[in-house]
Image (cartoon, rainbow, N blue to C red):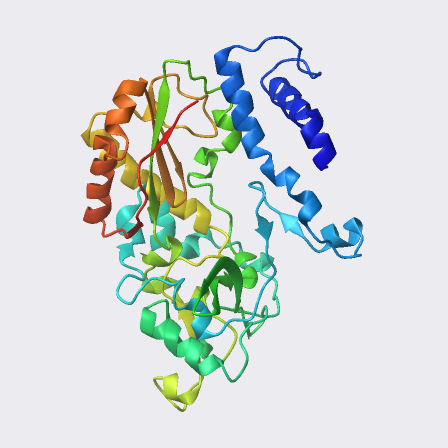
Length: 384
């Protein structure tokens, strides 16, 4: 690999592929003198290929590549999809919203139209009873010894509350309950892996109809492919990120029988020691069939309120079902993330770099109005 990289073969392949993706002809890049812009672009590509030069320094096992990839999956962003892992409370402390923030955003008050109706009247969106099929509970990846602490922590944080097992929605007389597991966030605090809590709600998912919500608006990375910057242009990108988005959205009491988990709580956590209780989610679950549709609709509603106040046309939104806007301003919303893209000249960019865009400021005000917690991100400048 190192020999090929240094001889330019990998770079030629990359340039040829990018040209082909842009509508050109797949082939070896033409030889000849490059202009200043082409040299700058090739230099950027060479920097991005530095990992290939490190391959010779890596130590691989004797495991075949077929066996390696049979147990490894990557998503559309090239990130590894991790397997379910056991959780202890120590794994969740730093990934869940702090006490007082879980469920702080009222879902039915922040959404409109059909999504709001879904949140208020979930029973209307269940499949006909004749189509209900009992499904055994998915596994709860928590050791018995760790269960009291995990359950107590979820209750204390406002993620879940005790709910009578006898009142859980049932099929053929058996409760339809979910499981719990963790997936790595690739973070470590004091030697303890930080895990993201996933609520495995496959049984109740099978009972619900899928709602569309704003799913069709989810942007794709490939949509920025037609974006063209001229040598006298610079792109400023300002980003906002909602913190633990799913678990900061609360659900009404009508959801309690539908979002329960299949392990009985210890007596000390049960309101009535003579009755069996389980955990029920108070918040929008990460693992529920319609959570993505709800989250996208909720965030778009908040963003549009901010844009409307500044009279920014919604046609500037970068969304899957529409062409890329041709104006100097564009914005995109992907679940908990917001990006504002503004094309300007290098002189203005140097002055604005690190400052808050007025539209981003308006969105922060809207976040505050809805009590939406956010992760701090700085304005960053991209020169192409």
